[in-house]
Image (cartoon, rainbow, N blue to C red; front, side, top):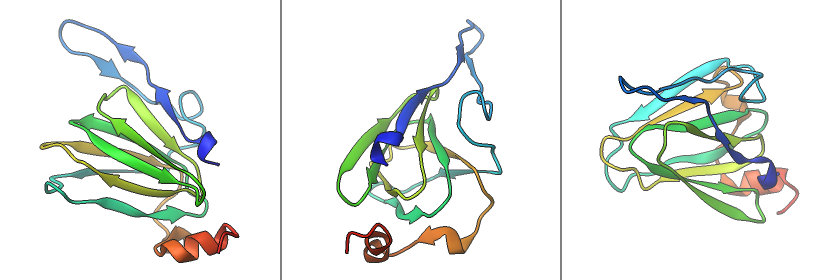
Length: 135
């Protein structure tokens, strides 16, 4: 599962007036986009995430600044440093994720395959491990 999570190079149209990057469902990401949200004004030293999803697919992009995403499948962990607006981190279902190391002024954009549904969340790591058959 952790091997299914990866950095996706997004199209970058370079222009002296300013660059443009776009994301198309089905072309650049393997899911239809049902929800978009973003994190900003994250205080220094704060962490976000700290949960997993049963069915949700996500693409996480550092629109501005930088931050780290730690992905965990219950057996292995992998840290990704996101700092380019033309890179997106694809996160498949059944992966625990934590976001930290936010730079000042960073903006984290998340494209999600489903609308918000609290029943899709694992909020407790032990429950997540149990669902993976690891506890």
